[in-house]
Length: 457
Image 1: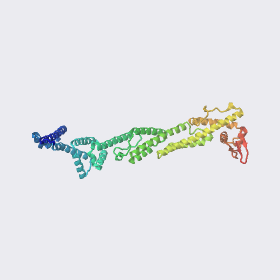
Image 2 (image 1 turned 135 degrees about the horizontal axis):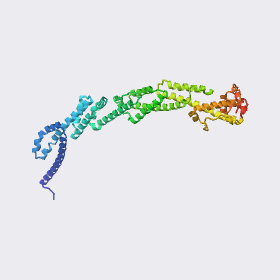
Image 3 (image 1 turned 90 degrees about the horizontal axis):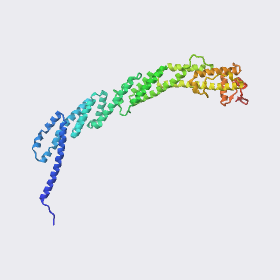
Image 4 (image 1 turned 135 degrees about the vertical axis):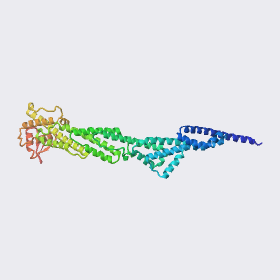
């Protein structure tokens, strides 16, 4: 027995399926119409008028029809009616923005961009148009350099304007932020009393997308530190503001913002370090009077120190590095002087102790100017005048207590030999030091050893 269904059932089933599908389409169309209604409500007066003109031909059909299929056939026409004013406004906004950016597209590039723009769905058209209009308002006050840079971006890649919110706007954000940063950089430099007048915000070379971020707080700190260091150097006789201005100007003219910021930071390090170092030089030299009488042994050394110090303050410096090196050389000269004076004081003290012990003459030994024990180079550095005075006192005492012919025995040679001996060294006996060695051997427990080469220890 075969199972057969009446044809009417098949017909009803198919019709029911068709009606169900039509019902779903009608519901979807209703939702779309509601969206269109919201969109029309948000249109400007001109846009709404264009919409009504576009829908005149289908109004009667929609009102009079009772056939769902006929109603659904108006979907495409209705969508086009909604799209049409949005397309026109989008096209106008697109054209206005290009004009504001002074973009020169070829006819082909322009037509291709507009065709792709007008093919977008109403929701996208509405969003893009809003972005165009916001951008137009936003860049209205932009400097010429920013407009030119944005125009170059569009000319290089016109398609970027078809996705303005996600592709073009971030570029606007970046360039605007860099512009504000460069303006602030100009302000920081302009507010200082030493920096050259430089323009960054209007120079397109400083908008390189590969350039690093500028730490304005670090820049301000560098500028302030340099100002303080320049003042310190100027007060102490060194003027290098023009040198610094030239170095920064050279870095500016390179057109690389990273190089300029690095140059500023390096200048701060160099100038601040130079000021600190020179301050220690001044603190050492100031207590010493250039025309004060000093022990004969140190007259020449001190004269050289003062000559270097005066040159340091009067020299015409050509670079920051040369300035820093000159100050460093001066500190090295001071270090050598301190080392020499400290060594002489040490030798004097030890020799005085030996002579004092041998002669039991403690009542007459010179009083030390330094209570510190052991005497360190830092003590001499902090009080050079007292160190020289102590040297002079001990030199006078040693001269009288060695009981030698001053013309034949050099006191400095005595101290040098004594330094070597107390350091555990052996000193060759030569015709030049023979009188000194014998004088020491006569007064102190110094052993003279004769061999193929005469030596004593």
